[in-house]
Length: 200
Image (cartoon, rainbow, N blue to C red; front, side, top):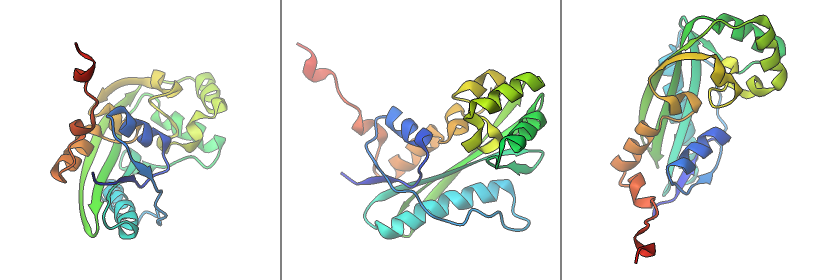
């Protein structure tokens, strides 16, 4: 069986892979995540996913390596992780009552060969009060998340509508991930446990 490596330190991505029954190693990729001048959000997200996968694949040429990157985009501008509570509050105020895009790319590399997919999900926030923005930021949840919120946590109560992939908003598009693995000869379902042995 091929070794599968997740090139990310994100606990949310690890949880999603575990959810679909995969066993894997974790080896975060150290890359420059600076947005290039004039680079679109779509290109940026997919480029980073590919660079992460290829960096770790270069160190593990016989393994399959998954890289992923997520950006929250409002009116064409990438909203990264907040540097402090004030920026988190400002970001949430901008998202309040607005539709934004969550762009998540996943890449699968083996050696120098890399395939990738981009998932774009439209997320609409209801209007948020200053008091709940303040309470949410005080919870600490927004501080390590793109766009200053986590849909799988407390921030889920802000989402009025979602069009696209829920798992991609969390951090890894499972449909696209499973597709890439299947194309590489590593179908996810082959790792699922069977209940046949327990049947009499």
